[in-house]
Image (tube, rainbow, N blue to C red; front, side, top):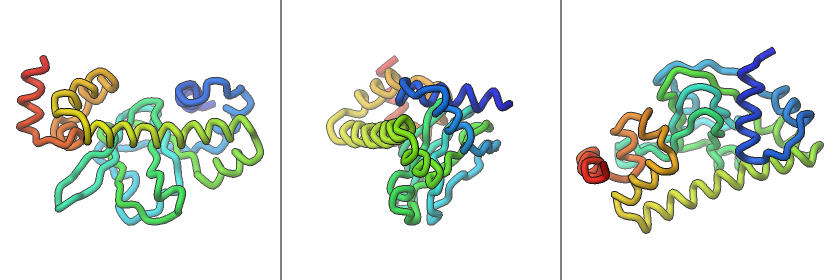
Length: 194
């Protein structure tokens, strides 16, 4: 028995839809495909079609893209998080986002076609699926609003408050691009925030 899988599914489900019963959690475990990842490994490349929801069991990953030849971090995900390239997975079109392992670790791939099939057969899985997608959309909206309305210092303080793991574990260069600032600006903001 894969204890890490059971723990990961429980943590992930409890964050999105804790009411999901044991039987449905076992259905999710039944479609999960374990993947060991190495630091620096690209799990999804630009131009590929995303076919899986990626559940992080151990380690940290980031979603990023290139804009004007520069690497820009879109999201960080770590234990219990679900990585979704939502446009690619829903439309089955090539993605411009990439997923990179920032740490060696373990992820579980939940194939989108199997998730959809389970969601049709089980109301509980359907609700979990819906909560997964809703959470992804909300995170994207909050990030966009942060970029539009918050100062550099406010963005950094918000990240410290809501995702302290990112501050502790992610390279500063990636944190800077995530917050839409240069590494120099991030250094100044950090010096003033501490």
